[in-house]
Length: 506
Ligand SMILES: CC(=O)N[C@H]1[C@@H](OP(=O)(O)OP(=O)(O)OC[C@H]2O[C@@H](n3ccc(=O)[nH]c3=O)[C@H](O)[C@@H]2O)O[C@H](CO)[C@@H](O)[C@@H]1O[C@H](C)C(=O)N[C@@H](C)C(=O)N[C@H](CCC(=O)O)C(=O)O
Ligand SMILES: Nc1ncnc2c1ncn2[C@@H]1O[C@H](COP(=O)(O)OP(=O)(O)OP(=O)(O)O)[C@@H](O)[C@H]1O
Ligand SMILES: N[C@H](CCC[C@H](N)C(=O)O)C(=O)O
Ligand SMILES: [Mg+2]
Image (cartoon, rainbow, N blue to C red; front, side):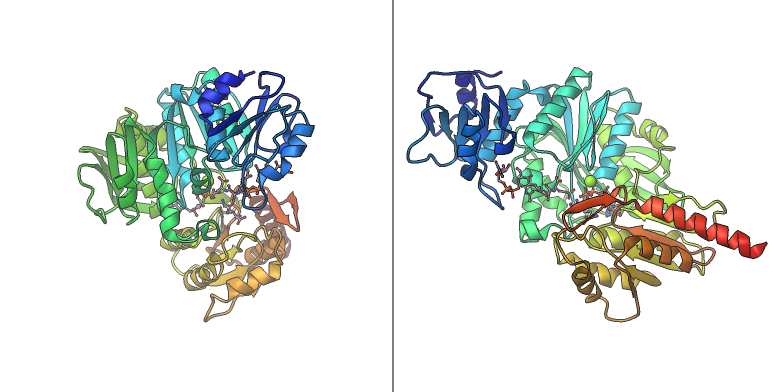
């Protein structure tokens, strides 16, 4: 329950019209009229699809006692208190932080942003902090860990109300820190406005979500918002091999900045400490590097293959260093930690002659990086086969680009569906195919069939990458989600193939 005068003080309204019958307390906050119950404050958010102002009457009908809006109606209903603000999304974030008693202020919140690698680095940072005695929560794609519980998540970075509720659970379960993924959507839509970040991490920026942001500059500016939200005594970690790292470093408002590089920074890191990896060796079952963070040398081995994962790990060690963990200790703590589910995940084939990898590469850069990584570690003379697709109702620019990359980097290409959502799967496949200018490819809209086709096409030693869905356990088409798991389907097909081989060889 929150008092109206307290609520008004927090929101600093442009206009305030108290209810006729005097003030009552607020029992719940919501921005969805369908969730309103008696005593709610309803925030009328102006959206991209519809406008919350259209649902104010419904909210009042369902018992809302306060309406927070950007435009007052001509005749405001006197049964409610009306609060006019400049932005309902901003107001919702402020109110959410206050509603849960500002729990983020008691946590060292580390935000990870960038196009690819957020989940991988955030999860491993959480593993590291936890292993070194810092009780740490986690919020990211599909999952929140509140210290004593794991909860499924719909969004990578949830809405402000859900976020602050999670922080409250973390504080109550004794967490000192939380590592969270911060998506560009969340930054632009004010979900993370009222979080005092202690750390900000930038992984990289490559084309993605341009349906939402419009241009790469706008997309970069969205990510940059995180670095402007770091507390004065906080830290930042910026990938200095990515040119867009410069704009993150420029926006940084904390005190300790680290620039990570696998060779030489591509921009002037003036004043930042350098974290560098060299002597990189990468194999199918892991990698090794010589590291140097702010003058501290260390050697690290870990179970993730691929040069891009060396950058991910370097950022994890740098975050550990900023939190007071010596790099050598961090390397020791993470040397046997497996990759996150659905990221370079190997599907087991009893004999070990067929390498089937499930990976969440769903952007052009990720697909390129993973194919390059597998190319580097595959056996001499083997073939690299890829099964992939592109999501429906999302950035269409990715499609021909991913087709081009698959055709250029793999020996065999099988295109299929990856969450077509409201779109026609064949139309998506047409757009992917448009990027393939030479060479042949197979098109199979049924994803299970495509995976089976890839597995039965393999010769001993070959590597099959099933890209795009990683940990996901569904296929979303025609407005419905049905159970689907790349690793399950691949495992079944592998078993089937092994049984057939056993039969033919006996
Ligand atoms: C593009 C985007 O992020 N859109 C978000 C945005 O939707 P919107 O502005 O279109 O909202 P809208 O549908 O127009 O509705 C406006 C308001 O009317 C309200 N409403 C609507 C209907 C009704 O009957 N009553 C009512 O009150 C809605 O609750 C809402 O508050 O605001 C909504 C609520 O605030 C979000 O749920 C919605 O996320 C959608 C579902 C989404 O798919 N977002 C994805 C793209 C996303 O956020 N992804 C990122 C990045 C993933 C990654 O790269 O890792 C993530 O963090 O997950
Ligand atoms: N540093 C990196 N650079 C480029 N690609 C990467 C990097 N790290 C991971 N990837 C690729 O991106 C995929 C997704 O990785 P991850 O889930 O860690 O990223 P994410 O940023 O959390 O993605 P999302 O935006 O969907 O939440 C991986 O499966 C891999 O193919
Ligand atoms: N965070 C990404 C995930 C995409 C995963 C891919 N399987 C797809 O559905 O396109 C998005 O929401 O765009
Ligand atoms: Mg993620």
